[in-house]
Image (cartoon, rainbow, N blue to C red; front, side, top):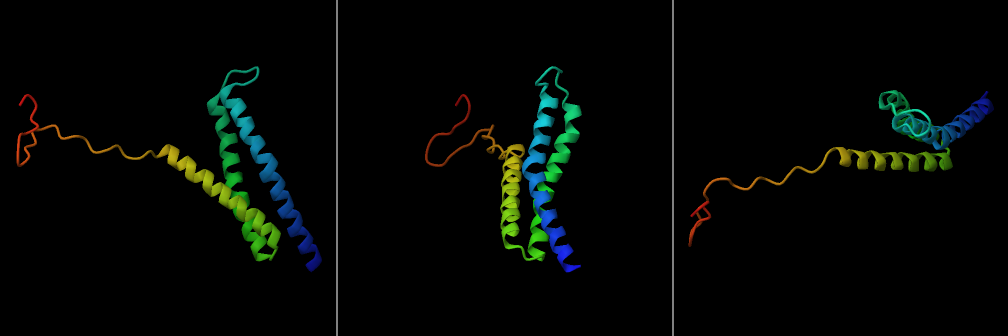
Length: 126
């Protein structure tokens, strides 16, 4: 029974790697082709949303599950592979978050008369 479990875990980790490296990028490409209408049909962004959503969940979830399974079954190589995958996912998520959350604008200039000691003032028309 123990040998079957070892083989099953190895197959699970290998299938996860193939799905993460090949299927997930193809899902993103399919979503992009659907959204932007590259090809014969016009673009349909709403139709592409499920493909992007599924690819995002799989792209983030597979490395996390893989690193947990590999670490708990003490497979050092797979732990490194999926650990690097988690780091890549974290980097992409951080960059995406930075794109969607720009830095706050600088504080506005004062719009009223500001008198300063030791000299003139910076009043409009003054």
